[in-house]
Length: 439
Image (cartoon, rainbow, N blue to C red; front, side, top):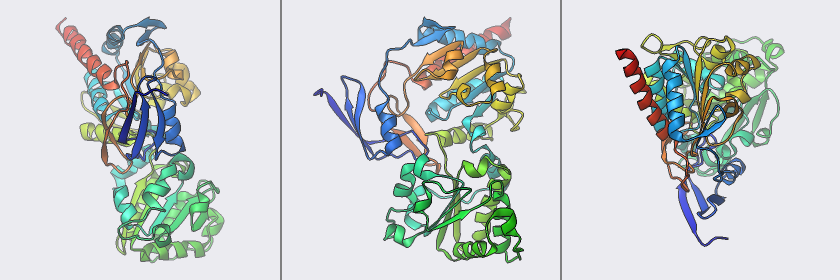
């Protein structure tokens, strides 16, 4: 092993929305890789271990190797000439880079969308319609004695969520950890998270809304017919017991995942859960939080929201932001064949979008910023190689509870950051648009 070793304490893992900031990284500076990541979960260890500096072109223009400056010029020409471009992704980059992307979208009258539109987009709609009783994960760790997970599987998707924030850690008012808590898991099937729960409630698929509405009725003292079990798979006795536990706890929390937002009901499901938390505040203190996936998807929602007033699916073509999911969301735009260019930042829609949307991406000029080759970068007209946020670049990210954290990079990359590329791209697009306006 090389003697040129660096220890980075209190580093941040940006793999998932937990954004754990207690990493201790051992870095081999000669080999440009992380050899050990203390405190990381299995997903975090893989995230740090796989990031090495591979020799790649700084940019590719129609498959031809190019410099970053040449790529910026080609990308700027595409965006300046486009009549209906889309800017998409943003969930795996810094808030500083996200700001530049918003500025570009505003400047060229583009559609601006994040990966929220294909995960917790329904929650974003519900937040605007219903509101949110919220808290930080630190407050939940220190106070929550009733923890309910609905439509999620943290044991596999967020391995440290249980151990660091919500189930087993000892808190200021929860001195005995899990012994002082009741954990409830609500899902359509038993998952690896189920053994953690004291109570497992299995609902029939596509009946989450009915269960939540029945709980709201019971909280408000209304009668619910025993036929609810036939519709939802959950007995009235089970619902009554859960309501009593919720009303009599000292501090309750509802964590909800994509099993709730991406099933029948969508934003009505999220809205019902958020409304349930509000109802319960007449009896005790209750909060609700979505369990977010990507490392800085919460940051994307925050940056886009405070700059436009909306979290995703925004259109700037009239000179001001308009919000209309289904019309201005990227999947829909591409599937309908409406966008004439795309700027994809730290995302790989070609790997997971519907077939019609991916096929249309082959027909328009696509610009991609990503540290590694992806399905989307392979079809792109302009593809930039960028540094990995959190590992090679500093900046700000938001944890899933809307707490901003500062990144401490482990080692430098020869490639530019997303922020550097987007800043240069914004400046060049501005110059081209000014020149076009003078003609």
